[in-house]
Image (tube, rainbow, N blue to C red; front, side):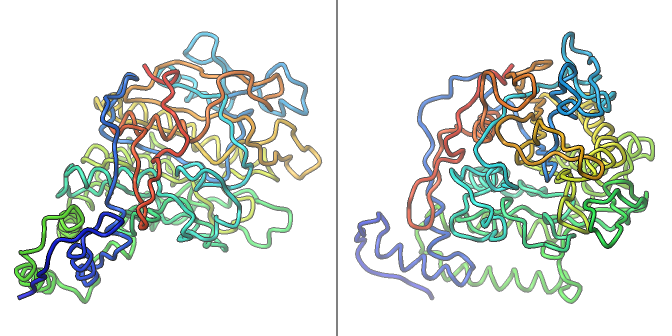
Amino acid sequence: MLSIQGTRKTLCDGISRRGLLQIGGLSALGLGLAEARAWSSEAPRWPPTAPGFGRAKSCILLFPYGSPSSHETFDPKPAAPTEIQGEMKAISTCVPGLQICDHLPRTAQVMDRVTIVRSMTHPYPVHGLAYAVTGIPTYTPALETRARDNQHWPFIGSVVDYLDSRGGEAALAEIPRNLGLPWLVNSKTDNPAVNAGPFAAFLGQQFDPIWTDFDGRGLKIAPKNTVGQSQDFRDPFGGTVPEGRFRLAPGAEPTPEVSLERLHLRRSLLAQFDLARQQLDATPSVQALDHQRQWAWSLLTSPKLREAIDIGRESREVRESYGMTLFGQSCLAARRLVEAGGRFVTVFWDCFGQFANAAWDTHQYHYPRLKELLLPGFDLAFPTLLRDLDERGLLDETLVIWMSEHGRTPQLYSNKPGAGREHWSRAYSIALAGAGIARGKVVGQTTRDGGEVLDTPVSPKDILATAYHLLGIPAETTIRDGLGRPYPIAGSGKVRPELLA
């Protein structure tokens, strides 16, 4: 029998000697000292005063990696000269006085469900995925290739998962609280190391997203990313086969050699070990480990998750309404996941094949990529997702966020092949809908060229804080790292009442 005796003496960091020994014993179960200390969190004791607290049961984060241009999406400048406005114009929407890019006619018809923020701003015009989706206060490009660097802060989906697990929320849910589609970021490129951001950092890898993979091939050769590109790619984001399906990534699947019988034997062995540690204090770290292990067992043995990501269960008509592209089918899978009880689902419009200037990073071939690949896929999937959620009664309880790392320059570089816009973070646009977000609203204005914020500057941290608030998590909540240091979950972000209904 495992027994730890002795007096309860408390060390200077608040952990008792007995507790320290117990935590050491937990390392055999995969929970080390750093992970155990990270379980400590602090939430404000006062009720939030902004409206909409807890309205969102779920969140779908849509992340177009590489960053769209506001001029060709939600902040067109029809009165600007050609070198600013470019080839695309503006069209009216269903909201009087609101115009968006003329290549988004379907999206224009759902703007009465959306709030656009045209005054997003921050100081880092780099591919700072981690800066956009975590509370980290500063950023360097080098961190993008070091996903496990100890400077990183936890991904918003990981924080939601962690805090829900501490509160006992759906501890045995068969749908994970934190899912990533369609695959691990940038894992299908020639530079797969650039993937920092959607990880749990000091909360521990057990709170990383559960990733899917996708087995459908691309149908169309995508426009080139760069002049020197030596290979063409059939990018599934431009179109994919109806037979394509999502599946759990290898790390989340039981291996073929491990049968259910062997899994049951392993569980029996764990149960015997548990008998030996019954005298351990019922510490939060031990309780949380139990929740996590039970959930992992549920994931391995239950068909509910696999059924939720099986887009083949939808009619061909529904699938085509989202667009037979990887982004469209990912949005459909996201809807199925939140309908099945998913808490936080992230859909990345990711790079494919060549990493340089891929996805929405349109330094070159700006207009060919927008016209042939990017805007058509978005203009099918985004409005269909909002309508589908609304018709199913899910939009009022599902927060939908479309945001990226930054924006693109107001200056159009027409001397590049297909034209191009460079990185720009001083002013850009995002879109939000559902679950307590105002409908048919525009927040913030930019200058006539779209290059600077005129009023109501909003930071990515403010979007995180507002999302936490709507998900029922006070934005001022702190979490502690392995050394006991407190970290505010949204960094410097504040809940923005301007976004709320």
